[in-house]
Image (cartoon, rainbow, N blue to C red):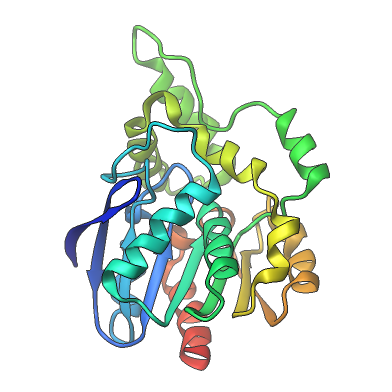
Length: 262
C-alpha cells in the first residue's frame, strides 16, 4: 500500500492505494480512518485498484473549520475522484462512509459504476428525531487522569466482539485524533436528508449488513425498497465492526458483487 495526498476544495485528503484494475473507493465509518480497511485492501487489490481515503476531518486528512456535513464529506470524495481520474469508479462505504457514498452516487450517477452500502442506517425524519434524543456515542469529557480513554473504550464495547479488544483499540486511536469534534461525523449522518437523495442513486447497489448489527440491520428492507437496483447480503457472526472483524468474508462478498457490476 502506498500513501498519498490529494488537494480538494476543503483541504488535503490522505489516501492509500494498492492494486490495479477497475477502481474501487473504500469509505470508512465515524470515527475511523482508512485503517478500518487495512485487512480488506490486500484481499481486493488482486482484482481492483483500491483507494482508501481518510474522510476530510479524519485520520491524516485536513480538518475543515466549517461545520461538518455529509455534503462536505462528499465534496472531498468528488475532488479525489477527479484528481485521480476515477471514471468510472465503484464506491464502498461502511456506516458513515456508506451515507457519503450514497450522496456521491446521487450526484454522479454516470461516474459511480456500483455502490456498496455496508451497515448503513436509513435516515429520515423519525430517525433524526429519535437519534437527536440519544446520548453521544464517542464524545466523553476529558479527565485529568486520562480515564476518559477508558470510558470511550468501554462505551464502544456493545459494538465490538468481546474477544477482540484490538479492534476497539484501533477505533480509540482514530477517535482520539478528532479531539472535541469526535461526535461531528455522527451528527452529520443524522442531519442528512437521505429520504430526498436515495431516489437519485442509479448505480447497482449491494446493501450488506452484519447479522448482529442491530443498529442498521432493520433498515436493509427500507433501502431495498427505495433504491432503483439493489440486492441484499447478510454477513454471519458480525455486527457493526463487520469490516475489520471479518475482513475475509467482507472482501469475498463485496468482491463478488463488484466483479459482476464493474
